[in-house]
Image (cartoon, rainbow, N blue to C red; front, side, top):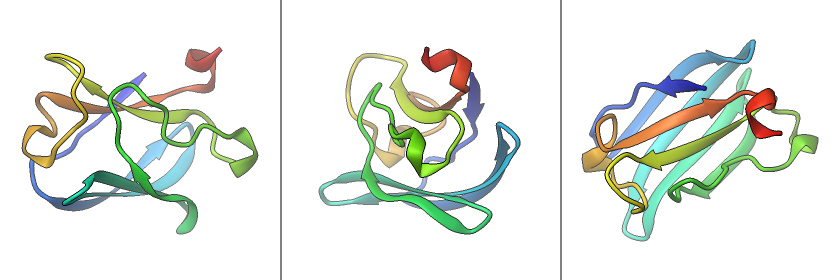
Length: 100
């Protein structure tokens, strides 16, 4: 498991290496919740996925992403909001071995 560093801002983009994959992430707040887009080598894997506490983001291996992502509320079981990112709400990368 690897924690992905996020800032407590309403919209952010970052690049990181996850499981040997060059990943680009967009995390953004809308009036209906927080959302995430995931790209590998600038190719979209999933876009517009609503962020839920302890729910896998990618979920489907046929999409070609090795592993998965999930948000965790460190103080309860609430869905993430931008003002708690990086502190209360952590985005983690789960390796394929963590998912079995």
